[in-house]
Amino acid sequence: MRLVSTVLGTPDPRGLARFYQQLRGWPIGTDEPDWVTLRPPDGSTGLSFQLEDAHEPPVWPAGRGDQQMQLHLDIEVDDLDAAGRVAEAAGARLAAFQPQDDVRVWLDPAGHPFCFFV
Image (cartoon, one colour):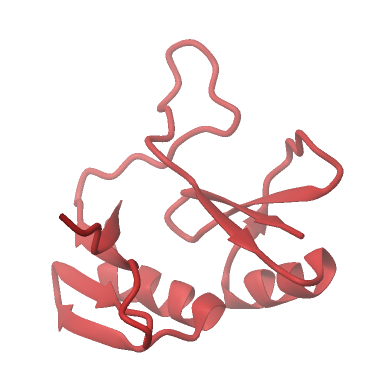
């Protein structure tokens, strides 16, 4: 068995794929209206984006009764501030709650949390 991809639900698969393409620099593989993939050139685990018309963005941090995140992505970077500028330019927003000084939690355009760390 080999893990091929992590799948994120979104009302806009192509838009979310373009966002992560700007962050990761990976080429788009499959490109259909309801399913888009990003695959790293080295063949390692990629990202996929699935159409979910009824997508409800998770709340970060979630409280009782809130839509909870199902997963988040951890992305190692060389510089938190520089990576943050790239993320913001691509369409991410910095989460209001930051649990650690050496990690930055961002929200992608569909509301999925992801973390930058050095």
